[in-house]
Amino acid sequence: AALGGRAPISPLARKVAMLEGVSLEGIAGTGPAGRIMKEDILSALAKLRAVSRFAPAASAVEIPLSPKRKTIARRLSESMHNSPHFYLTLSIDMSELLAARARYNEKVREKQKKISLNAIIVKMVSVALAKNPYLNASWQEDKIVLFRDVDVGVAVAVEDGLITPVLRATQNKGVMELDAELSELIERARDNRLKPDEYTQASFTISNLGMYDIESFSAIINPPGAAILAVGKVMERAVVVNGDIVARPMMSVTISCDHRVVDGAVGAAFMHDLKEIMESPVLGFF
Image 1 (spheres, one colour):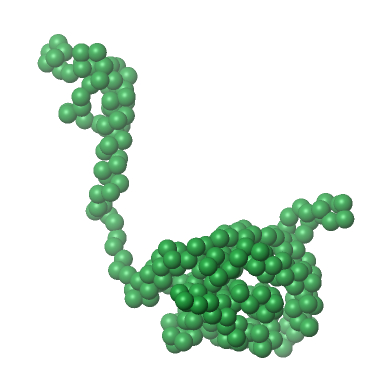
Image 2 (tube, one colour):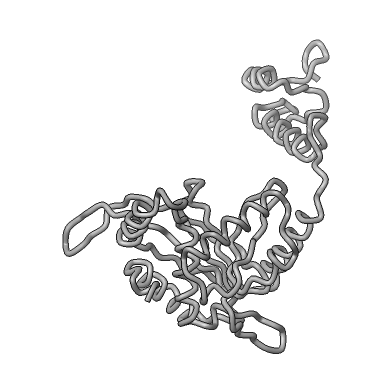
């Protein structure tokens, strides 16, 4: 015991304890003759913070899970656990596609609303999937199912989670038809008016977070599909073209593939075709 019955403590340790509001009661010193050192105070502080982090806070708010949120959590957990994911990323020069979209929107601006980039991406993806059927497929334990139709789910953020309205047989539809259908599905999704068959059984899914300024990301596969495409923001970037450094609108895309269905080279072939189609959009329309 120190003189006066107080535990011996170094001046620095006492200062740290005062600044951090740590009580000296119960702290065992590790210094000479049981002297409490700065390190003892910091160790006690770390333990207090660890306990408070996991203790229920009086000001915390508990949010009950909706049936939809529970289903999303269960399906994505099962997908991540059961499907061996691998990822492929590349950048697409959007110059020609954006120019074509701008010309079209300018031409029809007084007749109808502007065509969305999502609708164009759905169309281009559909063309690429027709050339790469193993990306439009599903693992069914004892077999691989190659879907005849390209049913594209488009991830949409709603109040209580995420939902994927599905555009059916997109390989048979033009961009204008896809755009109108997608707009209607998104509107009804946000009003919670979608029927179950309108947001389930997508053969392929697209998740676009570009509107949130996300440059690139990887997504979890949406069952029963074997792949999902994550789309980032279109950004001006410096690229080399014919030996010159120029600014081009570039978009990063990442494909998440189920390795049980899609081999690396097969996924790479799809991404190569998608890049070629989107950089030369005429290939996607004829």
